[in-house]
Length: 325
Ligand code: BYC
Image (cartoon, rainbow, N blue to C red; front, side, top):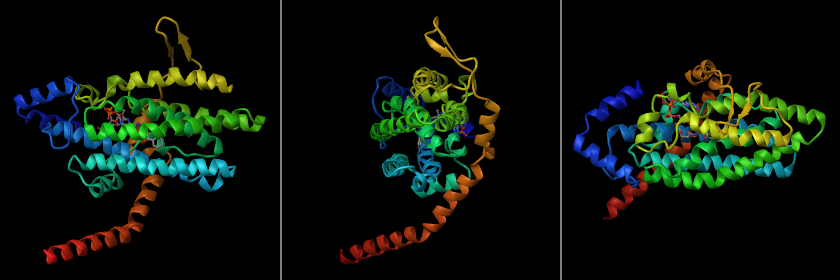
């Protein structure tokens, strides 16, 4: 429905303006908030940046759950810093979305009532400490693969937010790899836990890149507008090629019996995730969808008195300023 809405609004734009806009994109210029832009471009950005912001915020839940149970003080301090970073990433992205004319409150409410999505990956549980290592290694690894090209995206505020985010994401991936390496090199029981985490999180991580190119609704237009720089399958392949040697180094087995290096293509051949599971999860039927949205709704409701207080203070200050003028 959203895609249809975008399409019909895009066609209402003046063809001359559209052509001039496309020429700016093709020339590699950045589009800034006050520049003219097609309505579809603006809406697609709000959808993608908003979904990304929500993913950062919801993504704190599975990891935050393990802060009190981290095995050492050092691991706890690292995880705490990482989870705080995710909140910061959400804020940069909400700010970027605000420059497109949607308030943070509006976009949050769209998450809370299910009108907007967040990444499918956060609808899977983190059952034990090995999962936290695997999240950093695989989930942050997939996130970086997707986000590094987005530093060159055409919308200025989004591109600048991505540059800051990517700096921190590389630390996140490294800490995850370090945590899973410790488990993989540990006792037989620990190694078993690391393998089990890889078994459960491999396919959900591949799903993070979105449906296969033939089923991707938005890719063609988003790539023409440089809102997306690569197709979903291109990035998924890059992720597989990068991650398989890392798993081998750790002595872990990727849970895909058909995975093999294809000399001719210069890439690994791999099995796609179960796409019916993916579509089911993004419809709201994953193992944790209900819990995640309930947690975010509770946090939003619990924080109402703070928002109301800040707003009342700001109003009072503005009224005093107005009276003094
Ligand atoms: N989960 O036409 P398509 C992170 C939806 S990492 C849920 O290919 P598009 C983090 C899609 O919205 C994750 N929904 O879409 C990491 C569309 O539905 P609607 C966040 C998904 O937008 C560690 C439909 O499927 N990163 O934050 O061209 C710790 C058709 O798909 C997913 C980003 O968001 C999914 N995985 O491509 C903490 C990066 N995939 O909206 C936090 C920016 C697809 O029409 N986003 N859908 O109802 C993107 O690059 C793109 O939006 C995607 C999807 C590649 C994700």
